[in-house]
Image (cartoon, rainbow, N blue to C red; front, side, top):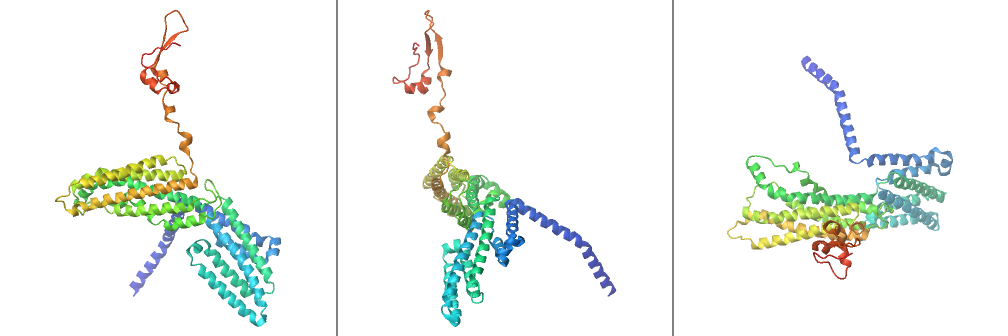
Amino acid sequence: MEIESATQHKGACGWLKALPSRFKAKVISAAKSIKKLAQDDPRRIIHSLKVGLALTLVSLLYYVRPLYDGFGVSGMWAVLTVVVVFEFTVGQTLSRGLNRSFATFSACALGIGAKHLASLSGEKGEPIILGILVFLLAAASTFTRFFPKIKARYDYGILIFILTFSMISVSGSRVEDLLEMSYQRLSTILIGGAICIIVSIFVCPNWAGQDLHKLVASNIHKLATYLEEFGGEYFQNRSENEEESCGGGDVSKNDKSFLQGYKSVLNSKNTEESLANFARWEPAHGRFRLRHPWKQYLKIGALARQCAYKIESLNVYIGTSDTKVSPEFHGTIQDVCMKMSSESGRALKELASAIKTMSDDPFSSANAYVETSKTAANELKVALESASLNNVDIRAILPSATVASTLIEIVSCVEKISEAVHELSNLAHFKKIREANVLPESSKQPHNLLHRGSVNPVLDGDSNHVVITIDHETTDHSPENDQNPKGPNPAGLRPQV
């Protein structure tokens, strides 16, 4: 027993001695997590400071005596409004602030009207009338929350309406000055909401529209990066992967970030819809007009996810060597498939650049890449039709055929994305850079007359005469010849000047 107690005592002492080091390790780990969170998005720190500033300003309703005498204890509603209304983006703050303000106003008005209507039925009938009105309005308001469009934009306002109307109606039977209570509640909520909106807009604003704009461009760029690298990864490195797998090597897809970047596109639907909903509440800012076509971003995002799902099916075949692939069929489609993949990736990269810069300058390159990928798809169809599949095991060509078929579908999807981005360009009025900066081809031709011609004097005693010899190739491209109704001068002609 003594030995066991001594052992337990030593164990307890060791645990107590290790406690400071464990506490220090946890503190360091927490500090690293906080640092990483702040470095990932420095706007989070600014948002935290903005919330503190808004709460400090609204607290003046309590700290300043004249303001406290005017609002009294109802000033606490302003503090609560700042806490529940202030959000990360301007659009989300405006959405919650306006919903709360209009819901409170309408609920107070209806509550006072319900109290007046119920009072007409006498002291015994008043509670019954109020109960019926509360039941009807609460049930009807709750049912409207099930409509998708209403739930997306006004769900918070309906919730505040039910809460405020119930409080006004129920407390109206016990409170004498119901109008004064409604006025103080409404005014303090308006003050709190106004402070939130002003601080959110004018102090380092975070715009939901800009976040949506960058997210859509980033998603398309991730798809472009994958498609540009897929051809070489699948075709050129397939034999190396097979050798490594036969030798016991482990080919890990996680070693290459481009193989995983597209996966974030698959789960971006909720984020895009949320940002688009909040962006509709925001005022005009930067190049984003008041009625910017935010719905078009959702269309582009949906098409990008369709392309990402097709890429997901392609990604299965990278690094796998379980199935014996027919080398003849594999070589037949290799060049065309690599061309489709790379050209589609380049087209998507140009489209992402067009969205990011809000200019139509990259569209010409994107259109060329799309057409090239479509031509490659047609070439692949011809190659498949002309390929000899006699005495060929279907299982041997199935993986490569599936990859080729999926790439053809991706080319079609990229074309749809290009059309959607062009539509966004027209609706959002992207900058016309090419029209302003690109000169016509004729103006780019050098003035070859100064470089290819020769000037010789005429030795006839008249110093006012010279002979200009102009080469035939030079005159064909000279701007002066375009204005000469007689056409270009032939080679060797010596006009007198």
